[in-house]
Length: 213
Image (spheres, rainbow, N blue to C red):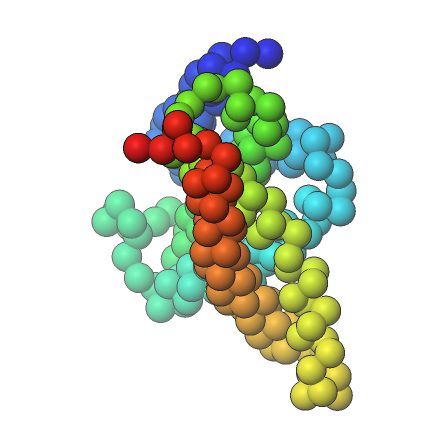
């Protein structure tokens, strides 16, 4: 398939998703659940059950934190987002309000992930961009796949720490471990971006002199 057609199709898909689910049907929890289910099935067919489960587990601490915040809003009986009196209890209102946003977040991440899986390295080369622009696309793709392959390795290193081996696997310790894994992943990706960026610039400097500004 023509790479330019792929880009145009991906942009149209993102725009349709934003218009339909981020604006028009934002508060429709049932429709958000349908969209999440369809994107989950599509992601499972593209990447497999293991990677899908890995991505969901990596986002689990953040999701639980969000739902906890919305539950706290309901317990404190904060006014509805629209300013009107909710028909249901405040807790049920805020949990429903938060659930639609969490489902939208998961659907957005899955959609972006599917789009990234759809594009191949050959598609980037076929764009015939100048190397000074193409290098950023190459670096972004490398870091994206690198980030989704590192959480398991980071979790293994965390389990090897003596202080973590004797502790009980309670919900609190698991939640803390997930947060530490996400923070470690951000640090590793930043360091890797600097290293890979220097390597790419070095290759360009010696192999693509004519494409440099």
